[in-house]
Length: 377
Image 1 (cartoon, rainbow, N blue to C red):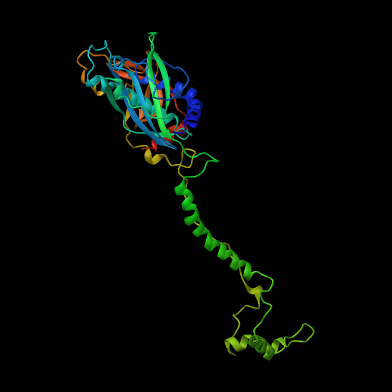
Image 2 (tube, rainbow, N blue to C red; image 1 turned 90 degrees about the horizontal axis):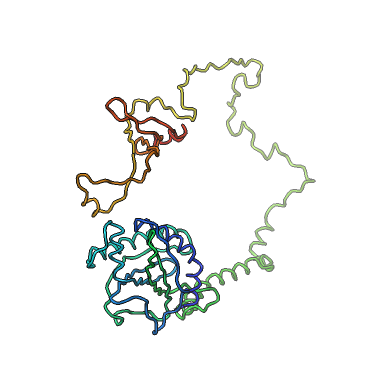
């Protein structure tokens, strides 16, 4: 395992990684999260022991991209109950069950998705595999990769200063760097396959050189010389040429009965008259952008007023009952969004008109965007 290269790559992206973990962790755990890196990353050795008490939790998944990596995350078993309580609400459970482990998998899956989107298109872009979680009762069940890299993180949530430790173990194969020797299989392929492909090109280049050499055209077959000597001598510019005798006249081609069209020689008798064009009707009015909007005026559209949104787990939705309150992402007093066929058209405030709710428009998007939104599905 190329530990040095792996450590350099991890150190280069550590600052950006921590920034994304703070944001993604806050969204997954329903609160502000502060993530810090612990001690400097080190190489995994047989003497390594994680700073967790057994039994502990281990999450494993793989990532593929420019290189393939296997990841292990170690954490205290009690952290599963805390994650469940943060995501669902309420106090941490006394006993850890499958639903609490599933909550940890859900939170980690959301964080991985945020990381994947953040590094998309960069050198660290990756595609994650399925997350698996297991409980380890003793140190004998912990399989440590030789030459892997181990890093530690600590995080706290909200106003609680309690630090929760997470250990990250990485193992993988990096792409060959510049200057490194290619594997034996690739070297063998270069000697056979690549050499065979270059051979026809070399022969073609040799043939081209022969065709373009200075000796080309010096030796002319005798038969060609004999044929050219029997031909009539070529007339030079000094010798007069009878063009009439050697060139066929127009009468020889079309016959003696060929007559010129009447009036062809006398252009003075041709009379010209002005062209009469049909008159066009008045042009239809447009919206100033070349579009005819009149044909759309009778089309019915759905107008929706969006008060706010909320992302909820299936478990949270199933627990809703009469009298439950769903907190939206809008603050009190913020303008509501007015959508036309799902496209935002304006912002406004909720009012009461007699016995009905209404919306007073406070801000409209510019006319060009409004026209474009009407034509989108």
